[in-house]
Image 1 (tube, helix red, strand yellow):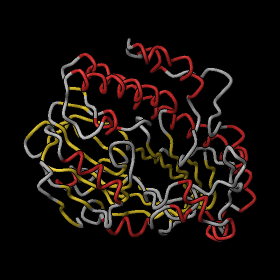
Image 2 (image 1 turned 45 degrees about the vertical axis):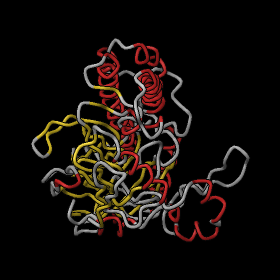
Image 3 (image 1 turned 90 degrees about the horizontal axis):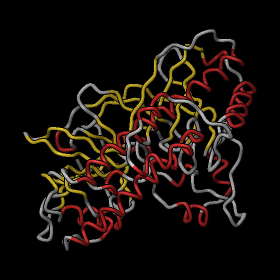
Length: 394
């Protein structure tokens, strides 16, 4: 832990593994620390940066309430990593290019989705909640799609002995989870206004456990978490088929890890049951396997949790941004970004709606993943280092 911040305006302290914490994120953390239902302290992971209402990389435990914005808009977003038994020495650059080209042709990215509906048994068990039922038809076409922003599919190699080909992907609940988050944040705002709740800003509007709205949100949120996992597994199964078609591997072993980093869950900490919100953070209970990716162009890590109680048994979910997308595109150059991608296959930089080159996902827009890992050595132990050899971005 880097420091503990406690001022007279706070009810509880802020414990941070991030140094320094950007001004906007710290202001959000201070606002959280004033809330009467926040339990023990607010925890900031080393990838922390400003989000909507609650910092990304923030962990907060609440007594008897749930805060939709402390979960985030991409409910259930997470990482899946697959280790194959294909020796990396048997894979050449042309095969990497061909595999990633077909992946991008097969799996819709950005705002695109499938033309046809995809099946998932979970659809038959969708909760009877209006916003969920309203979005089911759209969700059937979003299943097995990557999304945009910082979502990615990456081919990697491990740096340990016996180098193998790995696949890692980052995606969530797509527009389905966003609609649920928006619906219940708006409900929380209206209820807090009705109750004249004394909150620093509307972005921290909450739902008391036991209310109809909280019960619905929890059911909808959990369903979106399940959908996000099904989405990642659908893509991973397709990727495995594509790899087999190029590399002739009959069977890829089921050595796969998955973690979720936008959710809330009832857990017991310091002797009390509380709703732990992890927004851009993953669970890191003792012995639990985690995935912490870097940016495109930098390494990622498979880690094992140490169960640190001060972080509510959590850790970072990635490298974390050091500059916003617009700032990155304004200040970075294509030449310097291309240098950082040397030796890694990718299909160039996209363009924004105005036709300008979009450098918002360039490696320089993110913090140093190795510094992030070093800052949380009391939260996790890195066990596998993965280096990118090719990437598809959303």
